[in-house]
Every structure is written in structure tokens, then in C-alpha cells.
Length: 567
Image 1 (cartoon, rainbow, N blue to C red):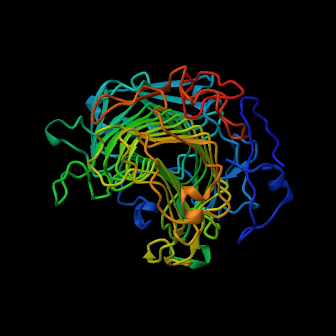
Image 2: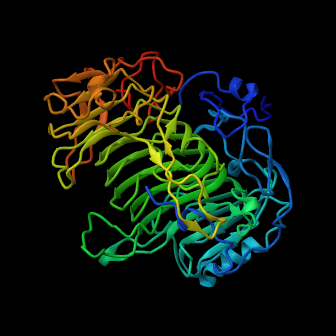
Image 3: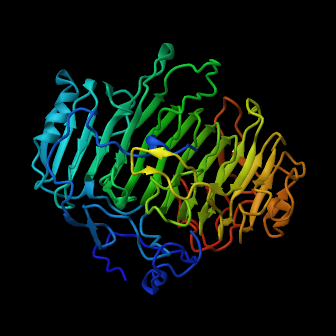
């Protein structure tokens, strides 16, 4: 069992499933007593190079050392190589958006100031020169930081001595502290096998004027593959852990017009806003992400992650708003706002990871114990909610909406649910993938208390699911509200692959759901707050994963409003 030593932790626990390829444990099961609670071909972009071409490492730390640390749940984290296996089902419900964070602790911070005149070297030198036994706060003065991008490896700290790297005062101020670096090998800020670090208040990518753009990911946090040339160590990573990415701006991260020169769809798939792989305990809070060529936030093999109060808009790349896949578990998507996503808004699980980058490599599903709640998702073409190889995942109190005039794509789906098929290939990390072609179903997922709507009556599919049923194994869909401009919902699929196959899915409204502003495209911005007379008000049903407050922080009554917002 877990012994929680931090009183600040907000805990709720969910999830059960059968054991496949992992050891079983009654302790793990008792930590998860109730049911509840991301697209790329995961090649080298989802792995982590050893950084030899990324520029300067900050040194320190032996690749084979085993430095024990303590994480938020009270157990030890081993900084040496690990296969990531835990008793199955894995512990979930341990991370939240409300718990105080280590970067805000009242510590005796050693303050270091840097200025843009010295460029990226100023940040690099400040990190390299910091004392890892002392809590250190590096503050970057406003301006543009140029030079070689930041690569940090083996920077292992502790809760008593974290590192906070902040732009200005750490506020979300687009362009105030601008990173304009070069030779980043795929990312502007890269952290490999590092821990207890916060990054806040930076802007990655130009303002887009005149078509300006930056062709790398904003921030990447990753583990390091252990002895990747030796298959005896297949799937072992030296993980990163304890990161806070807060109040950053990631914008125009793409490589210019594609061959079709379509500004409404970047197809290069080069760049995420933020990305983590083989990482534990990471919070993404209050970031603003727009016009990236791939995912807004991408998680692969990530354990205990929370994406809270982020703003996404114009995500027109070949990716999702947020995804978590590749053996991810204990994932929370809460109170995020998305306006316009070319593919899916929230991806619970993901498509086609390969075993080289799954962590653990034998994890039976893409993701386990993902909770999505209080999210507002507007104009996400391929579905506001996506389930792809997710077990015991829950979507509750979300608002999914298509505004009048949003017709630039053919699809306007509410939910998509498909199994993930693991990919093969040969990689720098341990060579050929195993498990190629293995099908990972969705199962034991719940969709409850959400509102789904297409104001103009042009919804294409309320539930687009695999025809063989592998996308909806033991699904519970209940007490939602649907609106299609007053028209009946389109019927797509049969039986469990159709919304009509779920008798308790919820009512289809014939009158508008009573929202403050249904919005338009591209303007005005939708306000999905229900008015007092809305049929959504006081219509929610109890569920263990329900939020105690709405997306705006307003407390919810016992019978809360369906959707992300209270009146």
C-alpha cells in the first residue's frame, strides 16, 4: 500500500482490469477500488536520443547510478534504469490539478538572473553552474534569447532542492521572454533523465506575422534508453520525473506551408507544443498552445500526468489536442479549453505505439485510468473525445460543441472509439519492435454527464466506433445530452458501435440547450455556460470521477449541470 507523506495531496482512486504481462497485487487493487476514471507512428520522434548531437549536456550523474528519490505519492523513485513495471492494475487517482506544487514551496531559493544579451548560453550556463543541493530559481529577463537550443541531461534534483526556470515573473505573457534558438534536434528545450524541474513563462515560436514559424517542439521531457544496443535491456529507461510546465506559450511550431499550401492543415507532423515520454509526475498548467504541426501535448509512456487549465486554439496539424498512450496511466485532463482541432480534442490512449517506446514494454493497453473532466472542446473535427486502446477511462462533465459555420472539414463527430494496433519497425532503441500488429481494445470506459452538440444540425457521427466492437468493450454511456440543431442524431454503426445501441446514453434535445453563446466560425467565440433555464442545469448524475467544481472553479452542487460549466 502507499503511505502518503504529503498532506497537500488530493487523492481519489479508480480502476480495475485483468493482468496481462504484469504481476498482480492485492495492494494495487485495493489502491484502486472503484471503476472510473493519445496520432503518430511512434518512430524515433517518440524515443529519446542520447543527446550527443544536441549540444551541451549539463553533465553530472552516472548513467548506471541508482539515486533514490521521493515522489508525491510517498514511494521511492529510482533514477537508474527501470522497465517501468508495476503491479497491475497500476495505481491511479494520485495526481490532481489542485495540489500545491514543489515549484511554489516556501524554500530558501538561490536566485539567479540572466539576460538576453548572452542568449541561450545564459540559460545553459546558469543551469550548469547551479548547486543541485540548493533550491534554485533562474529568472530570464524579457527579450529574445538566441543561439543553440537548450539540452539538459542527467540533471537530477530533489524535492528539497528543485530547479525553477522562469521567464520574467513566470506569467503567461506571449512574446515577453521569447525563445528563438537553433540546432535543437527537434525541440527548443530538451530535458533528458532529469527531475524536479519547473519551466514557466516562456514563449516558443514567433507571433506568426508574415507566415513566421519555428520548426521544432517547444519543450520535451524524456527518459533515456538504457543500453539501447543490447536487447537484453529492451524496454529499460532512465526516466525523468517531477516536472511542472506552466504558463508557457507554444505557437506557430511548424515548418511552413506544406505541398498543398493549405494553412488549415499542416501535414509535416514535425512539432508538438509540449511532449513527454518515459516520464513520471508531470503537470502541464495554464499553457497556451496554437498552430503546431502535430499534437498540442503528447504523452508516451507517462505515469501520473495532469493537464489543467490549458488553452488550445487553431490546432490544424496532423495530431490531437492532448494524448496519452504507450503504457501511460493515472492521467488527468481537466478544465482545458480547445477551439478548433483538425483531428481529435482529447485522446484517451492513442494510435499505434510500438513496443520500443511503450513503458512498460508489455503493458496490455495504450493507457489506463485516464480521466477527462470539465473540458470545453469546440470544433474538434474528428471528435471531441477519442478512445484508442484505453482501459478504465472516464469522460465526465465535458462540453463538446460545433459552432454554426464550422464547415471547413467534412467530419463533425462527437466521439471516436477504436482499438490501437501496435506498429512494428526497426529503431535505434533496441532494434526491431516486438508485438507488431497486436490489437489493444478499449474496455471498461465510462462517458457520463457530457453535453455534445452541433448547433447547425450538421453532426456527422455521434459515436464513430470500430464495427467489430473492439472499440467499445464493456462501455458505459449514460446521462449525456445531445443536440443536433433540433434534428435527430445521425445513425452510424450498428449495435455497440452506434449511439443507439446504448439505451441510457442520454436524451437528444429538440430545442437548443440554452447556452450563453453558441458561437460562430471563426467568430464569435462560443460561451458554453448554461443559462439558468437550460435543461442541462441540475441534471448531472453522481459518479466517483465527477469534479467538485466546474471549469471556471465554481463549486458544483450535488446534482451539477451536465457539461463543463455551471450556470
